[in-house]
Structures are given as C-alpha cells and as structure tokens.
Image (cartoon, rainbow, N blue to C red; front, side, top):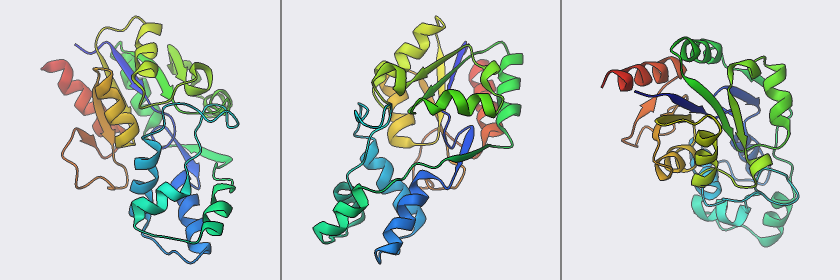
Length: 223
C-alpha cells in the first residue's frame, strides 16, 4: 500500500500567471518566432530536464540556454537574439491555486497518506504555500532551494521520502522529463499530470487532473 505521496507545486497544485513556457513563447513571438504553445512547452522542459543543479544566481532554479531551446525547436537565430533572450526575466510573480488542489490534498490526508511537497523553486515556495493556504497539508517540504539539487535528480526524491520515513511512494507532477523520469530514477511510482493534453503522444501513467490522479492512487492501494 502507498504510504507517501510526493507532490509537485508549480502547474500541479499552483498555477503561475503566465506560465513559464508561456513567457518563453511570448518572447519568441516578439522576435518573430510564432511557435505553437505545445511545441514551446515540450522544448523548454526537454532542455530543463537536463539540469540537475540550481544556477548560483537564481537560488533553487536553473537558467535554460535559449540556444538549446532553439535547437529543440529546429530554429537557428542570430547570436544577438539568443543573447537578448538569455538575459530576459521569465519567472512569473502571480499565482493561484488550481480548483482541484484542496480536494486532492484533503482526500489524501483522510486516506492517511504522508504528504511531501517536492519542488524546483526559489525561496518563494514558502510564501506561495502560505498564501494559498496549503502549507498545513504537508508533513514535509523538499525544495531545490534548500537542498541544492533539482528534479529530475533522484536525490531530491530520496530526501523527501527520508524526511517522513516513507516506504512506498508515489510522485505527482506535470513535467515528464523532470517529474516522471525523476521519480522513476528514485524507484517511485510516477503519475504525470497532463492538464493541457501536451503529452497525448506518450504512453505512461497519466492523469488529466488531480481528481483523476487521486483515483489512480486509490487503485494502486487496491492492487
């Protein structure tokens, strides 16, 4: 039986306005590259999936190189465009809780699960979970800001399990290369949250929302 559920924060429990990849798409469009949002999303997170350690000037997060993003998109811009994009601010300062987040968290607590927030984040994670009033649902927090490593590195998942002495865990997150692959590397059962249908081509354990993710966890308990 599952005793521990690890949960991502950004775009899993909390939505940022605009989302990180949307800020990238906006910048690309300003420079004349009108790329489909899904393609931008997949390219950005394929690049970030290769980052295991935070950038020293960002504190908890890494800075993707737009050269790599353009390469994933099959685009070849002028070097000055890459330089301008690399110096741009992409983090959003506005956020809100998804409608299904409290339902998901409260039901897991009623089921007796240990809950750990596992997030690639700056120190803003503590302010965000306090303002969205979800802090009290968690038995522990494992953040890249404090640990110095990022998902998909297995260390952050292992650290999360150790903090609550978990034995059998599930991780729920929205990025395949970061959340799903990282959880598998740490020998956890991953659930990919695909709210926007950006991973329709992948055959893996997926949920369209957190209510469906909860149903998957319930089925895991019964198997």
